[in-house]
Structure formats: structure tokens, C-alpha cells
Image 1 (spheres, rainbow, N blue to C red):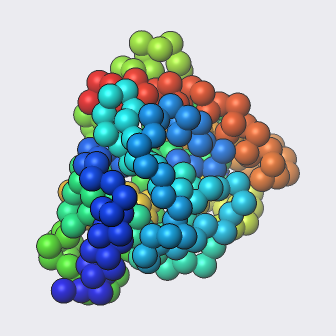
Image 2: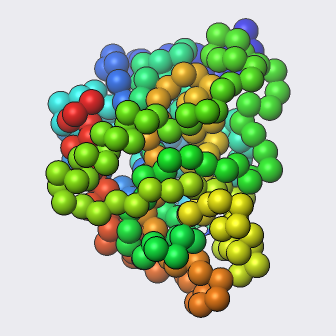
Length: 276
Ligand code: HPA
């Protein structure tokens, strides 16, 4: 047994002392995007600090809680607060909760919904827009699958031809349409951070085919794909990253825009879960 597998088993064993719920769906909520949590009918709430091998969140705007309950009648497990590579965690630590939530060795989730705050580089995007992630580029310079592979969790060389499930994408799109909420679609590029990008970097990232940029989501997506989970990712465009007209941005503004646009994201996620 790999050490990773041992740690997953210990985390799951601890969680199982508190709940027997089998979540179908795992949810990871990004910066300023905790509103969906209020919609969950809570059954059990655990502090990350208490769960063996769970990293502890260092970002103040994040609460470290693992929430079990029902959303639109479905069993879900939600991470309130996520771990970022820039905080100094390894990729394995960043993605450990996804392992724990999953159907492979973990709690049972076969679907993963991820949200994040991202900078918009597509000139058609505006602050406050929602973007359904259709594909991604990993520019974090690291990978959570590096190291010995646990063949029981997934293959050594996982396929990434469809990292974001096309059925989930069309379900989200239809949910948004029925709710009369405008959504963009696009490619998300993950960078290390924690600094935002220079104009030259935004020009480069746009040039290689990305529509939005952020500091999360891709590691979790890779690990979920490794285990055969289907993933939906959605970004809130919190700032406009157009190199020729770039203005300074603060994390407070990013969070304010995320908070303002959040109800749209919550509505789509809730409706999507109902239709799953
Ligand atoms: N760059 C990286 N991450 C981000 C940005 C950005 O411009 N905006 C929100 N998250």
C-alpha cells in the first residue's frame, strides 16, 4: 500500500466515525464563492484541523470545513476553503481532499464540481461574468501525480482528452439558459501565483490559448481525472486582464466581485445538481 493510500484510509476512517453518508458529488468552493454552502442542508460539519492528514488553510478568506449534507436532494460533500499551491503545500497536499471525497478509496463521490475566481483575458469577457471551463492548461510547473503511482486509484498515464465532462458542461449551460444567466465558455490556465501577472505574461497566456487565469483548480482536476471522476469547473471573472489597458487590482476587489457574482454561480450549481 502506498503512503498516500494509507493516509486516505486514515482520513476516511476518521470521517466515518462522524457520518455514514455516501456523497455522490464533491464540491470545492473558491475564493469569495462560499454561498453555495448556505444552500446545503447540513448533516455533518468537520473542521479540516481535526481530519488526519488534511492540510490547514492559511488564507483568511477561506474557512476550513468539510460539509456533508444534501443539495437539491442529492448527497454532497463540500470543501469550504481550498488549498493553494502558493501557500506552500505540495501538490499531493492540495489534492488530498479530492482523494478523500472520491469513490476510489474515499467517501464515494463520482462527480466533482469546482469553482474559482479568475482573471479574464478573453477581450469579450467582463468583470462579474461566469465562465464554464471547457479545457485547461497546466502552467503550475508541478503535478500532483508525480511520484509512485497507486494503480488502485488510477493509471500511471491518465488520459486528459476530456478533463471537463461534456455532459456536465451541457447540463450547466442548459441550467444557465433556463435561469436566464449569461455564461461564457473558455480555457482556464493555472499559474503558481501568488502575484498576479505582468502585462507581458497576460499577453503570453492569451497567446497560448487561455481565456481565464487563476491559481487553483487544475491540480484538483488532474487528481479527479486520475480516479475517473467527472468534473465540472466554473470561474467567476473577477478582473479584466487586458494587457493594453491593465489597471492595478487588489485581493479585496477580487473578493468583492466574486461575492457579487456568486449568487449566479450558486443558482446554476444548485440547478445542475438537481438535474444530475
Ligand atoms: N491572475 C491569477 N489569478 C487570479 C487572477 C489573475 O488575474 N484574478 C483572480 N485570480
